[in-house]
Length: 95
Image 1 (cartoon, helix red, strand yellow):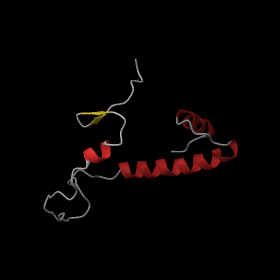
Image 2: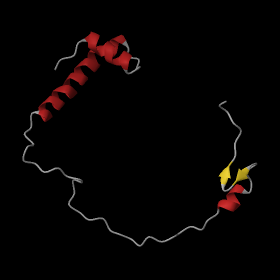
Image 3: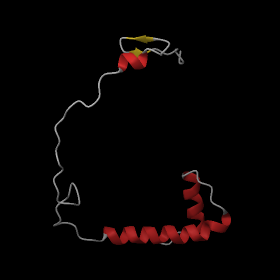
Image 4: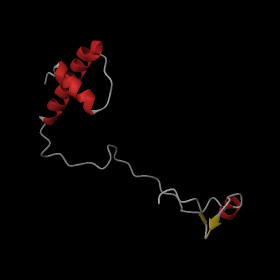
């Protein structure tokens, strides 16, 4: 799929990306190559291919779920100007 300069300009405007006029030909060529590759991938027959949740057939090692850090909320909130019920209180900014 060959993209022209006008299409590249429209894409850059929609993406809010500044593209110099001297680079438009290079971007058109590169994006056309990418779209051609995607088109080629779409033509691959995947009807009899089972979906994978992960490309490697491995099982994750499980570890015991244990507490490794102690609750330091009171220590950390002791320097805060205002707290209530374990929450930091801040001034209202939207009325």
